[in-house]
Amino acid sequence: MITEQVSSKQIWAWLENVPDPEIPVISVVDLGVVRDVKTDGGEVEITITPTYSGCPAMRVIELDIETELAKRGVDNLKLKTSINPPWTTDWLSVKGRARLEEYGIAPPRSAGGPERCPVCKSVEVEKVSQFGSTPCKAQWRCKSCLEPFDYFKCI
Image: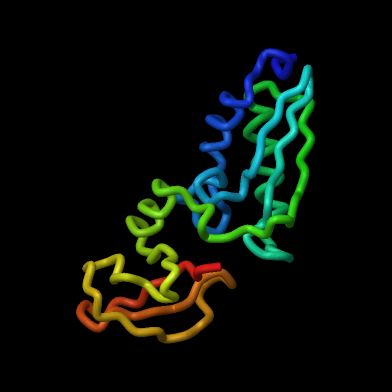
């Protein structure tokens, strides 16, 4: 039973391997969904927060966390969901924001729209639809390269 010997720092590192099911280039850690990791004796407790109430990806995230840690020998895991405080895009890591843009998704900005096109970096962009490929994204288009792209909504 490896659980007794594992540190919370090691658990955080392993959770970096768990991708968000809707945006697989970003981990659940960089997304800010994993809020806390505690180890106490032989038990690991992980607190997660959905990006929004009713997020359909949460059950998949839970299963992926369980699977990743089971591969590492963690056999006494408690997953706790917390909606207070509610998730915010402020919880996205700098690395996560960069990965979103590299993937072609404009990262959130507090000003309410993308700063630039993630494809050609032009600032000439326009909103096409408030709704994108998932509820947390909106559809935008670049006026320079004419490419459509998702914008991760600021919450």
